[in-house]
Amino acid sequence: MEGGVDGYHPSTQTALSIVAIVLSAMSLGWQAATFALIGGRVRAELRPGGVYDAGAGLVTIRVDKASQNWRHQIR
Image (cartoon, rainbow, N blue to C red; front, top):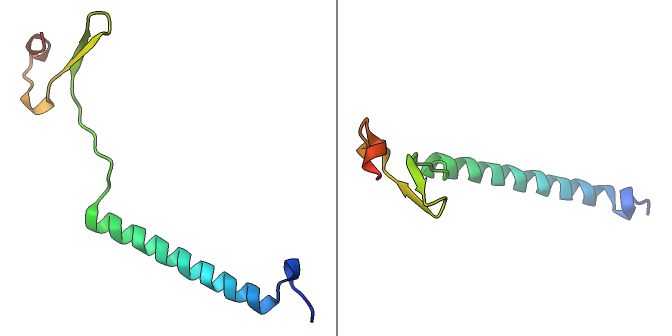
């Protein structure tokens, strides 16, 4: 019996390749469906603030609650 690459029979390699392609397509479809249904998971919130006591503390405020003089609100 003639062997294919690495001693595997060519029909075994073909079957394994087909299984790998099907699984990768299903995985990609699952990721696309999850992203479409749930959305991206990365969330960021901009919070202006300041550091006091030479870096020993951090004070922040929410952007939607900040006024034009936000630097005075965090003191």
